[in-house]
Amino acid sequence: MNAAVQSLPETGKKLGPNEAVIQGRIFEVRRMENAVYTVINTPAPDQFSHPQSVEVISERLIGKSQEDVTVRVLLQGYRKKFQRKDGDTAWQTINVLRVVE
Image 1 (cartoon, one colour):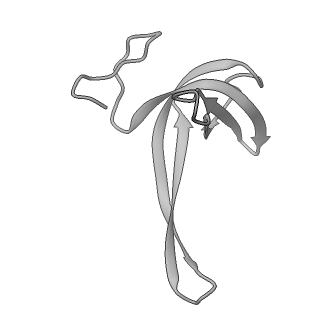
Image 2 (image 1 turned 90 degrees about the horizontal axis):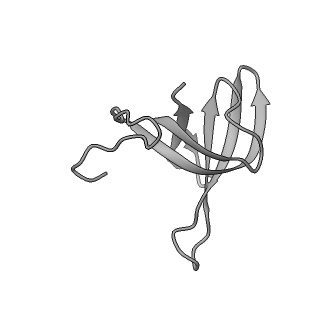
């Protein structure tokens, strides 16, 4: 993010700490327990690149497959410790994008 404060295009609201805007097309939606997991494909930056895919978690449906969406998300995450096959301990960082509703 540059020095200027970024805002949401449709509302003009300023982004808070650890917030971002994801813009793209919904690829897949699945409901599990009390959450909805939505995979969003973002546009490729150029004709030689592939689109990126991100998964966001929300309390309710944000759209259907193949719909274009713009969502505000809170960046969260945690670290998970595991044993590698060679016996060494390693850490994995899990990033979570939670929709601000």
